[in-house]
Length: 90
Picture (cartoon, rainbow, N blue to C red):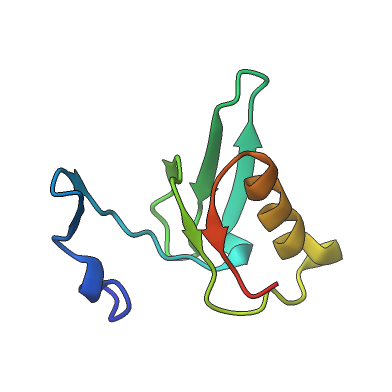
């Protein structure tokens, strides 16, 4: 795993829920939400291996900059409106 993921590997919350860490750049993410409240994030890295996750929490380590038309900020707003708690620098 990437070095920033190692501190979380094998850890759990309240002893029964194992932590799973996904690390990606904003340009690799897309958000999908339904009218039923389901929210999922697709991760499509340049190196291949697309996957979907339903995040319980989001940690943003850097200021979301650039992107086409402010896409990173829109993604964060979408996660917030979808009820995903998080910690970010904005």
